[in-house]
Length: 355
Image (cartoon, rainbow, N blue to C red):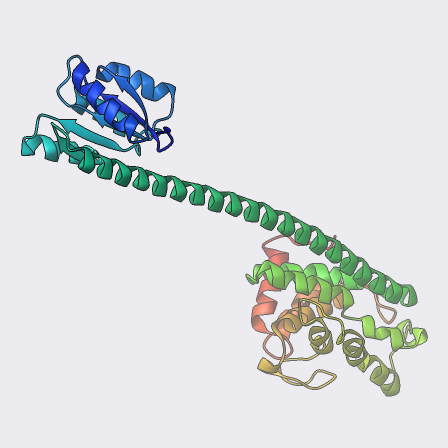
């Protein structure tokens, strides 16, 4: 019969026992090799693959218990089926072998039918274990592939986001620059307001993403002035009621221009509310208290402070000390106290200065 049912190693110090067992198994279709002691068996097991080991216990130099212990301590061999076939049939020996990891235990002299059944069962268990290992490896390979793809796609998304962020920032700065070319007296105003608003928001403990929204809103907060005649923006004297009414529409114009842009933050609403006051005396809607966004409350403080501190067509610059005094005086009336407190802190305690 061809030897294709598996490769077995018979380990027994008795030549007759080895020969009988090997002959029987070869006739049953197994490829069989033999070892006369434990040391030879270990050397053979390390040198080539076997599907199962039939192991005697009572051997000189290294007994079956020692061989079993060595096999079960090595990762490459610990799942190899070991069927103990021994004349030492005391229950203590049987229990010890099973506890040490033996697959089965048969007494000598062996029953061929029972022996073949136990070998077949052991090989089937080994095959199941190997299939499980194969499946685990396939799953691990798939997981590594998926992880690699996720990392690759995450990197692509990050790069796309960075590109979009640069495009957005460039567009925002271009719009700001367009306005300042019409109104040279307030050149840099929007950038300075944005800078101060971010410092106030950070001092108040706002999340970084919300502070970034403040930065963008600050740069765009006066974009609505694009509709105001340049001669009004640069008029050196006091504005008439009609002229001031034209100035007052710029938050609404800015809102209308920005409301359809899908910013990650409520930029249009912040721009609309940046001249509102908590007592309801602001414009354009007369919103008050909790109806005003936190970002708009911060922006209004930064806007007024910068306007007082810097030169305007109708008056010279008054400096930051006068500007801080101005917003402090109107804290709780026009301005949110927490925003004023944070603003005062960034100037007097944190040494803030416009860049």
